Length: 392
Length: 196
Image (spheres, chains in turn brown, orange):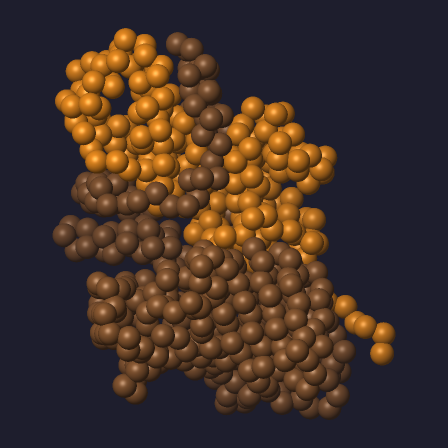
């Protein structure tokens, strides 16, 4: 029994941290009602309630409306609770979901594609949380999910990795010396990593990318340098603008959510704005972006082009998806290349096929290629760490 | 949240027991944010968390005549919330459809305001996904997508708060997206040729 309880503790933590696999998620709920587990859950809830501080999302709730609902409910139970209502509807839903939902669940994570690619002996697994952290003195720390706790100190700032695998910087007192510590986080092909900067801004670093920053933002500006791709959620601080430098480009912001894709091997550098406002400067050119817009510029030209896009597509990788909206084969293969750490070779002309859709990055490569194949006009061959794209 | 002051909170509960709305409002404002965040932490659903918070205060208000004898107001309120949250999880564990909703929130959580579904043109899959939801949620989605009503209009129509309508729609979109992404047996990737 003790063993089962340990398992439940482990699953509970993963569930709360939103870090569980589909199987672990199912297991967590299956064990919920087992003997002893209710107490474990209650203990975790007690702890959570004691220590939590409300998040920013509480400001989005219409509290006045709720208060009025409660007060004017009178003595009767005017608003039936969630659970009563659920019981009423449950019967009708059970019939449909019994078949449909169960079927879909079994499908996830288990490759049973019948295409010939699935039989390929050397399938390629997706990437994961991998990175290298380079400290100010040149020391390199290899990061993966198993590393936890304080990794190093940079002046008065502690560099820590928490149980969900992200890196964060915590100031442990006033910075007295004026010394600056520059750190660099780099991801390999097939790696990604999340980072919380000393000002609490959150950064998701995509594969084959690197981000450099100082470990305490004491100056008038918060400056980071990016190669590759990252999604930023910048904490608001109007007194100290946040600046992303990437090659010839500067993205200047006050507090907002946006994606920067600046791979040297891709034709275009793209900045996509989800929320707030940013200003992009490339050489002498400059443009102000509105939410939902994407700005891009080429390798040899400073001209900035603006267009309206689905901002979710630009940040798809952060949420664990590949998302394509009428994307050409080259763009699709670039994304696969970086996540699966593969080389791409075209046999003959590049197929003039366009892709639209969404698919999980947790899949093995063969499954994704099978799906692309079934769309017609294209086939793939996997050889070692190489994928050959064929036109037909 | 301010420092916990047992005595003054006991006094507040005693006043509420007498039917003092002003005192109830103070307790509401004192606990609403903490309770809400707590429930979101365990349910991962903002829409359902709002309903559970409301349900918690409703329980307190409707049983106000028993509040006279509470020794530890914070513990008491917490216990009400904890039990409701636990019940929610236990109910969810019995239904794959509800688990799928939680799963979609868990995996597709981001700070998106409202996603569009332009990409996902498979009406059949969307209908399939919608059939797994409660009638209330389906109706809200229909009002939003087919009737083109604003969140304000839907709120007025259903009697729910605007924030709740918004969160419900965001979570339904997440659910549909997850459903379609996982339905790999039915193709989720479509393509077409460009004229060469």
